[in-house]
Length: 191
Image: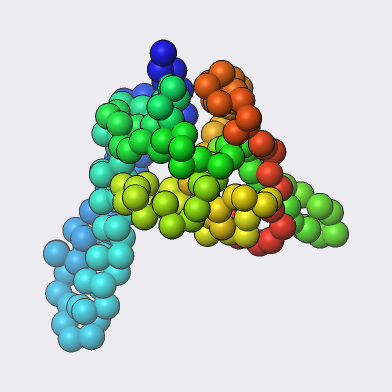
């Protein structure tokens, strides 16, 4: 039996608001550029600025349908299946060495702090990550936190608010209890 756990879902109103804000940051400078009379280097620099401001808008426009449909993980007897409305890829249990929540330890103003934890899926061999090109953006290179774990992991942000983390842990423990190894704490400055 497959259990679907939604990690991120935006309401249509939130999606429209975020899209509108990023559009304003792009369209207003574009409007000034189109109605002004600029020339030479000033025109080139303004077009470059408008092009840079278009990037956040285009990124949000691309992500909005996925976040409205819901993004998360499905866990079943075959493995873990990330989805963004539809299944993106499947990581089979035979590829997985460990699953758990990981965070980064840092020193801030003399105090030891940790970043928000994320669900980390370690493979038996880091080379297996190449078998999942659609998950390339979720792969993070890092030192293996233990023996037999890949030097890197697929990492998915799980909000500390709500029951998604507990549901993921329960689903993994139901299907492969020996693979639940977290929490992992990484030393360093990358997150």
